[in-house]
Length: 390
Ligand SMILES: Cc1cc2nc3c(=O)[nH]c(=O)nc-3n(C[C@H](O)[C@H](O)[C@H](O)COP(=O)(O)OP(=O)(O)OC[C@H]3O[C@@H](n4cnc5c(N)ncnc54)[C@H](O)[C@@H]3O)c2cc1C
Image 1 (tube, rainbow, N blue to C red):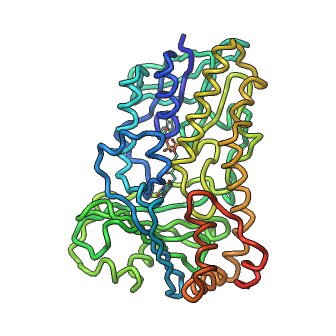
Image 2 (cartoon, rainbow, N blue to C red):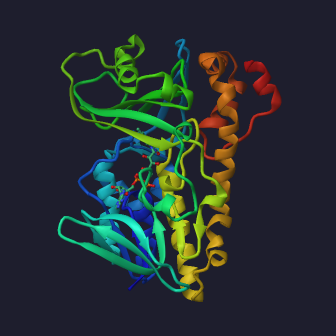
């Protein structure tokens, strides 16, 4: 029996496993397939490097600037020292780097193994049922952490949260494209669209970039994602950055993600915690989830350590996770952003157009937009800010 059994070795599960293994606890990390590249833009918030400073060894292109484009061609450029600690990663390399760090710390990684159900829970024990090509096997621990992302079978089976409904999801399609480009290698390009969602181009290196779009809410049903993606690629605004025709798509994929933001009541029960995408730790509007998933994994590990020290794996003991200040701050931020979605996207994103156009004329207004969407600590603008956009 392990101290902690973790299902899913994405960023949230790996950070959780590493923190536990470094503290000397026995951990098994169950992973469906380490050769799978998670569909993702791969933009890394500076906080990711605080949680895993060794990532600097990957020599990723630093993000020093962001350019936001409105659907009607206005732009907001922002450059700051805070941005310079962000980067863009190829998720296959990034995820496997984090997994290596867990194994070096002493965690056991079970690759090509799918978790699909729980065994009976007792006060002191919980088990996860798994399948691999050769066998079905149960892994038992005192605590189970569910970090197997959007498609988690265990999260809805735990009874802690329901299955996501279609209107709680965003649908993204992204590719890694190879070929010479006219992109600034240290800039993230974001394009608001006349529908719920946005498009992006994130340079990975001199010859490769990640490009994609996502839609959410009612636009998931109204629009065909594949057509939306190709329409985005053909847009003259995008073509100005990728004018050459000798491009090769070296990888492309489509994937959903929960966009409503996490609910505090959906995080834990006796012996179980849910972290990362499996719990909904994705920022509404921006769709960023790597750093918040890693934060949730880290706090879940600290919660499990406390529970192991005290020998108490009850829901009450594991409530430490959802009550932790870092988790509460994320939940609060997601809730606020969720409450702004209808405002920004009403009338085919007209308010996003106005917002970006206003930043071109008014530096004080631009600062408020940066504080709301980009800077380290989100600042809520005053009522006048929203009145000016209307
Ligand atoms: C199109 C798209 C673009 C995005 N772009 C960005 C971005 O640029 N920046 C950003 O910060 N966030 C972005 N996100 C969000 C980000 O990808 C996620 O928030 C982040 O990957 C969540 O990490 P996680 O560890 O919780 O889950 P995941 O990364 O999904 O990892 C889950 C892991 O569990 C494994 N697994 C799944 N099922 C099972 C099972 N049954 N048994 C065992 N293992 C299993 C998977 O193989 C995977 O390794 C994007 C998401 C999408 C869909």
